[in-house]
Image 1 (spheres, helix red, strand yellow):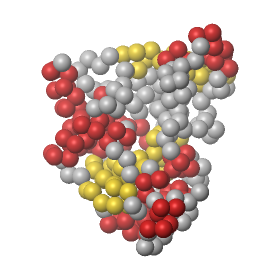
Image 2 (spheres, helix red, strand yellow; image 1 turned 60 degrees about the vertical axis):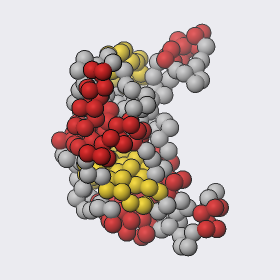
Image 3 (tube, rainbow, N blue to C red; image 1 turned 90 degrees about the vertical axis):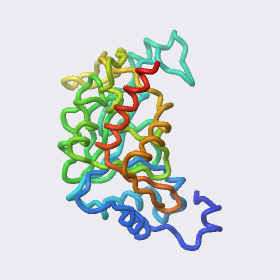
Amino acid sequence: MPILEDLFTAKAPITQGSLENDLRNMGLKSGMNVMVHSSLKSIGWISGGAIAFIQALMEVVTSEGTIIFPSHSTDLSDPSTWRAPSVPKEWWETIRETMPPFDSQTTPTYALGTVAEQFLKFPGVIRSNHPQYSFAAWGKNAHHITCDHALAFGMGVHSPLQKMYDLDAYSLLVGVSYENNTSFHLAEYQVDQPSTITQSSPILENGRRVWQTYQDIELDPNDAFDEIGKDFEQHCPVVKANVGHANARLFKQVDAVNFALEWLNNAYKEV
């Protein structure tokens, strides 16, 4: 359903072409490697919806660059850890025995919105092989970014996030806050003495479904990310503009990760 308020108040429809202009005006260009976080509702009513927004990104970045979206499926986890809602303890073993394994072609994203889910359907998009923290990419460096995604410590130095960092990639937030800035997680894996936890998920191993256990760190539930982001903007270059009706930010991932790492280490010292 169209967002009626936008239809009644907008002077002109948002289109793929107008989105391309907005993206170029804020500095997006051909050849960039950029990870995107977006809220379709915040952009406003678009002629063509999520498809038009993705096509605008592709037209601006071109196949000489790379577009990346988080494609996480964090619901593929041990039911004993589930909250809001939790499930009865009597169900846990049945869920572990029957939950379908992660499949890069068929497993849906979880709580990431329409655009990230639609992106997976585009020709040429490649998805990394991680049951909870996969990333999807299109363009020149898509294979490099998504291949060899380590199971343990899934957003650490052996993940697509580190490869984006090494490629001097950008982060683009469209209609979302720094709470959604996945790049900050890479800093969490590098803080002094992070707390480790045990995770488990259903995966395919040699063509067979197995319930696999692996190590990870205890991630911050993003509570600090907005505060980090506000401080980050006081110290590092961040381009701010509108994409459609949404407030958008464009910045270097290297800057964000390095700043967050220093911020987190200082915060932990104060505890």
